Image (tube, rainbow, N blue to C red; front, side):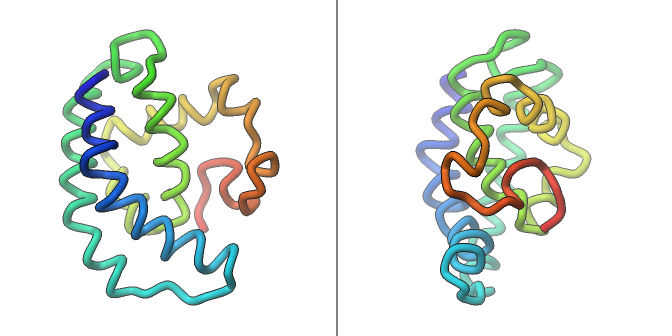
Length: 131
């Protein structure tokens, strides 16, 4: 659990979620501004490293701390969900154990109880879907 949270806090948030989320989600959906493709491209290698590390940490478990939901799952799921409109991020998840994990998390009652509308986010972030 601590390892997954560390990857998110120390690497993924600043190197992946902030730049890709801003360019693929926030700027187009909330500001009506085209994404800066150079920013996205620059963030992809670090994002791939994080996805690979998190896939390894998750392993064959249902959740990051084993078979029970943990703080790592609750922290990572909304961040991954934010990036799902980015085709590049969705492609990174293909073939990993993170994709089924994210689908489990999006079906979890805690995620369902926090709709995107409550957070004033675009409708495309309500579930895992192509942007």
